[in-house]
Image (cartoon, rainbow, N blue to C red):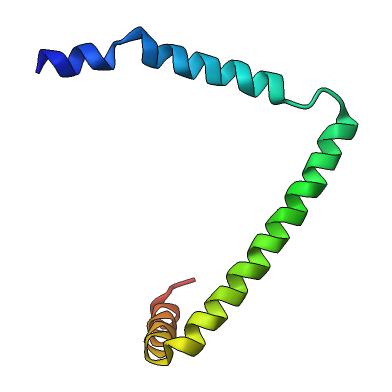
Length: 84
């Protein structure tokens, strides 16, 4: 048990989080122009991810129709029992 406590309080683990904070500050954009560009690229990447996710869900539904039907039924039951 004392070994676990010592590992938790090691300075090496604390140093890693401090180093990570320094890296985050260094990577942070300094100008609003760069921030807007990164926001636009983030939105583009997010839209691409959501498109691929939707496509993957459709493919899974086609490949496993029984599971997809059961999931639809569960969703309908959830919506019926949901109170506004």
